[in-house]
Structure formats: C-alpha cells, structure tokens
Image (cartoon, rainbow, N blue to C red):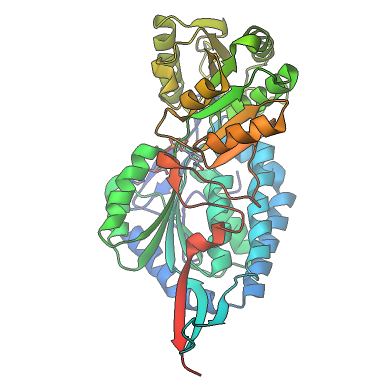
Length: 475
Ligand code: NAD
C-alpha cells in the first residue's frame, strides 16, 4: 500500500512490541497489520509532543498557517489515495469516502485561515485603575481520540485547530481504521510539521493506556469524538488532573416532517440525512416524526428510494451503500430492527442483513413504530429509518426532545417562520431546515445535553485548544 504501518512518534516510524490486524469489512479479510503501542511508545510520544511544544507554540502563526495550507493542498491532490484507503478499512462507498476526504481537507484550509486571526483585547477597567489585556495561548500537549466512522475528517477536525493554535498532538485513532490516521500524519510531515508536533499511537489495552496518559501532567487537553458511553468514562479520567476536555459524542437525530412540507424535498433530504456514510454518522437521522396528514406519501416515497439503493463493495463505483465497519456492528443493527419488528413495527423496505462475507444490512424503512419503541432510544448507526406518526408540531417537538442526546435535528416545512419556531424549540446544537446535511468546517459543530461539550470547526474550534490569559496593569 506504500504506507508505513508503524507508529508515528517524534517524526519517525516506530515499531511497537506487537501488531494488530486491520480488516476490510466488505471482504472479511485482513489487509494490514499495524504496530500497537506499549508503555515505552506511549512515553516516547508524550515526551516528543512535550519537547516539540515550546518551539511550535513560538512558531509564527503565518508559518503554522502555511503548513496547514500545504496539508490541504496535498490532501486534495491525493484525494483518490485517501478515499481508497478509507473504503478499504471502513467499508463505506467510494463516493462517501471522496466526500469525506474533501471535508477533511477543508479543516486544514479553514484552520490555516484561522491560525492568523487569534484575537485578544485591550481595554480600560470600569474603575479606571488599570488596563485589562486579554490574550490567548496554546493550551499544550493535546490528546486526540477519534472514531472509525470518519477516519480522516475526525482527525483533521482536531489536528487543524490544534496546530493552528500552537498545540502539539498525540492522535489515537480507532482500532478499526488506523491506516488513514497514519497517512494523515505522513501527509502533515511532508507538509512541513516539525518532528513531535503530530504523533500517532495505537495503545493496547486502550482504557488503561489512555487513563495513564490523562494522569500524566504533560498532557493538558483531551479532544474526544466517539460514543457518549466512552466520553463519560474519559471525563471521569480527565477530572483527576483537571485536563481540559472537549467531547463530540453520540446523536439520536430527529427528522421532523411537518404537515406543510414539500414531500419530495423531504424524501431527498431524508436520503442524505439517513444514508450519508451508510447511516454510520453521529448526524444520521435516527427517528422520523412525520405529520399524520403526509405520513403515507412520505413513507411510500422514502421506502421506494431506500429500496432502490444498490448495496455492495465500497470500491465498486456502482455501489450506493457499502458495508458496515464490522460484523458485530451489523449484528447490533439487526438486533435493533428485530426488536422493533417484535414490538409491532412493519418493514416497509428491507429489514434484514444481506447474506455473504461482508457486513451488509439492507436499507430499511420501518413503519408503525411505537413512540416508546427501543429502536428510538438507541443510536442505530446503520441504514435503518424508523417512522413515527405525530398529530401536531408540538407533539413532534416533544418527542424529538425526549432523549438525552442533542446533536442535530432536521425540520421540513414550507413555512420558514414555522420551521424557525420549531428550530428554536428543539434541544440540539445544530438544526438543518429543509436540507439533509449541515456539516461545514466554517460552522460550529457540536451538541447539547449528552451529545457533547464544546464545538469543533467555525470560529469556536480553535478556542478548544487555547487558554485565555488576562494581564492587569497600571499605566
Ligand atoms: P467509541 O466511543 O467506541 O470509540 C471512539 C474512540 O474511543 C476509539 O478510538 C476507541 O478506540 C476509543 N476508546 C474506546 N474505549 C475507550 C476507553 N475506555 N478509553 C479511551 N478510549 C477509548 O466510538 P466508535 O464506535 O468508534 O464511533 C461511533 C460513535 O462515535 C457513535 O456514538 C457516534 O455518534 C460518535 N461520533 C460522534 C461524532 C460527533 O462529532 N459528535 C462524530 C463521529 C462519531
């Protein structure tokens, strides 16, 4: 594959004490063996990031920006290589992988532009006794932990702002998708990131290794994307040393189709909101609340669109839905669907795993889903859309908010005022009105409630990697 499968520490490729396999989930085959990190490699990565910090923090913002800009240009130039790598280890289809690579590259471009715009302020104190000077400084060595569903974009969404702010990083990618992370580190090194500024490790066992890192005083910041369950553990671990933590956690996105919605537009939006990345997205529409007046038409058209999707290997350009990341992930989806069917739902399209070696699940629309069904309480993370009929906007809003998650909500209505009133009442960090996708590196991404703490992207993202310093002085 022309890519090292060792760890990336202090600008060097380093072998760990043993290796672990990386699978192609569409073929059920091992495609590589990557080094895992033991205590010595964890110490080496921490020491390298710590040693590189003073010089990187003192590097001119313009120079940091130019390295990030080169990283953007290299990633765009190498988009086909990255997309194929993502398909091989993740299973998603090539079109989704290409979309991810462009999205991932944009974080380097956006934060190259933000690196030179870190503001402060200077003002007289209200009492007139002093001046207030506020400035921002890099927080320090940052530990970045990412999931498998967007192996490139979740890494660049953290590395971009960290490097722009002047922090050095240790990236711990998901065990399912380490190859893309290693390729991103290699790219940053070629773009000019000095040794030690970006390090990648795959520690085993994960929990104990990350716990030891969060108790190491050299590590000052944790940026995590993954499940709410693991986020909760990490917040506890981070609390001993009061490590600053930002959390991008699970979602359980509601998709509201109000009674005046344009149904064809709602179906087109639902296909994107549900099926981008084969449904394996924290932003994936997970619960469809559809007004009784339009639910028949919406369900019929949505099921027809879902039923017509071609399921197959991600590298085959005719595939529209790829494999889930692993057989256990597919089986979790199958269990949720079986439970919903037991509880009285009907499969309007799909409803079962697809036979064969790959981790495929048929695109599924479930009708007649009871409002207390277990499938509405879990992140499905697969190509399954449960539909609940609602009698009013108020009921839709109540049911949408009836979850501990609050990442994103989707609203379809022909009346902008009605859509905005609904958006204001929904308890989520992001709302899509009459569209199926919101993600944009220039906008703040993050959740309310147990979907997270802090924001990535936009003008907020860089502040997750900056401390605020107030200097008081008398003239
Ligand atoms: P996960 O929580 O199982 O794993 C995420 C990362 O944490 C992986 O790198 C994993 O190895 C690591 N990890 C697992 N246990 C750990 C522990 N005890 N200590 C330290 N690290 C540990 O999540 P996943 O299955 O890889 O990804 C899917 C989840 O990620 C979904 O819940 C999804 O909603 C969420 N997600 C959220 C966002 C967001 O921006 N809010 C984006 C993508 C994915």
